[in-house]
Length: 197
Image 1 (cartoon, rainbow, N blue to C red):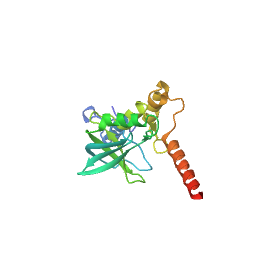
Image 2 (image 1 turned 135 degrees about the horizontal axis):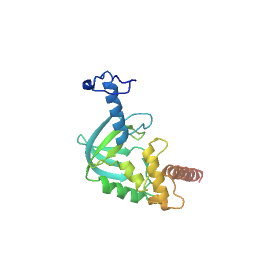
Image 3 (image 1 turned 90 degrees about the vertical axis):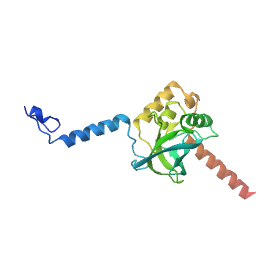
Image 4 (image 1 turned 120 degrees about the horizontal axis):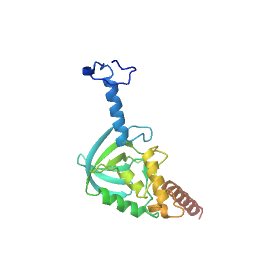
């Protein structure tokens, strides 16, 4: 019996056609990519390449240094923003990230570079977990919505907020981008005051 429509994959032994084999394989691969969470766009760019290396430094919750081709490379974790070290939970985020990746080999999926020259990427642990998702799940990072539309990160953040985990236990947590902006404004006001004196 011939199958109606272009979406049926039939085997020759059943008298079907194989003209849609490529389409079928494309659908299977796309489904697998969605199931394992292939990262989305960051600052308008798609992930292009990746590499594995040993993490030799953790600067804060969302920035680390990895050995890549014999050189130290600074990586900014894709899609999230952890509290700054001077903020509540900033040191907790750094310690948590260190516990997951410091001294270990991770795989970095590269999305590009930020304005500071750091590699932007997802860090995958040896057991397949994603560093950004683990930080958000623990309540130690915000989804950086300006650059990320990842629905998994949004769901993990909502669940951490609801459970009041990590920084969400604070009555009014301050997002790192707001904290940095306030710090810049305070610094500018201080500089203006000193220039007048």
